[in-house]
Image 1 (cartoon, rainbow, N blue to C red):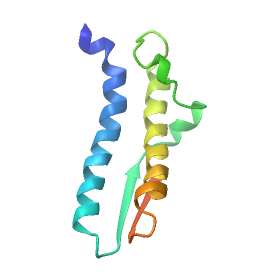
Image 2: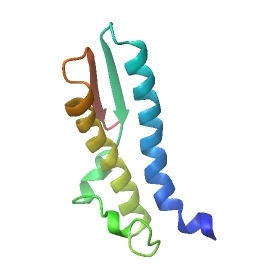
Image 3: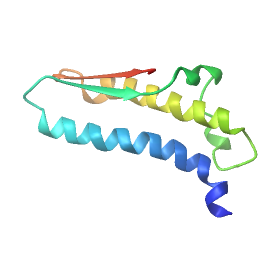
Amino acid sequence: ELARKNAHVFMLGRNLEGCQAVIEKIKSETASQPARIVNVSSRGHAIVAGIEFEKLNDPNAQDPTQRYAQSKLAIILSTNELNKRYLEGEQVYANSLHP
């Protein structure tokens, strides 16, 4: 029961954690070489206006499609921030895409 209630938070976290682990590895190993990071998201992100953080812990607040869309939006937003905050001036470029 607990796993079912927290599945939406898990999905958001899982989608972002995998990206972050790879990003940190790439940054440390390719500092002197050009590299690209490509995060796979989904155009499904377009059905939501943003991430409703206050509703993440309420399993009844949104349907699974909205939660999926928010997790994909989170990937896009984190990729954009990655470029702004961490990769500016480096030879590593990050992009997100819809398959």
